[in-house]
Image (cartoon, rainbow, N blue to C red; front, side, top):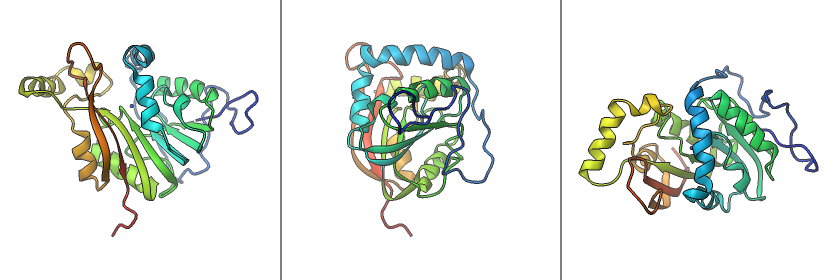
Length: 248
């Protein structure tokens, strides 16, 4: 796992690259501007994620992830903003939350090039700085592996979605046979999170969504890359979930 741009698109905001806007929908509570700070990993991630767009087919995955969305969308953990180019024009606004400073700067730059209005703002997945039930859809893209508190983050995603709202997700997690799963758990207990911006390999995003009260729609498990060696990060899932239209 905005701003909007300059030029001839009047629907975009025009912030200076380092000035992050106050969201129209922001709640009156303080959120740390740098809830996450991984500058070395952010630089590394920026390079590998751009390369993965074509080499691993991530651009096509982003197209499938976002196809058919409309209305107001919140993207939680927007990273360097590579999803922004794939939002359909039926989306009226994207509010993109990113806690890491360098990645947020890259996301602001990507927002300026987007075809839909994008507002980039600081904030943590566990404490989203937006009003309840303010969005038609939420997007989680390679985010649940690295949040500090998965149940709380998913609770926040439910809170900000309107009843019946859509959640789109693309996540990596636990997978493979017993040996691979053991290796994933061992890496999680040792070096992997420290070297990779808090990422964990052995989380189960589908189980976490169910436990958080989302209604699971269609989803497919996939390997990234599809061909070649199976890596601890290869086991991914792409799908849709909903906040129940009627909740007690």
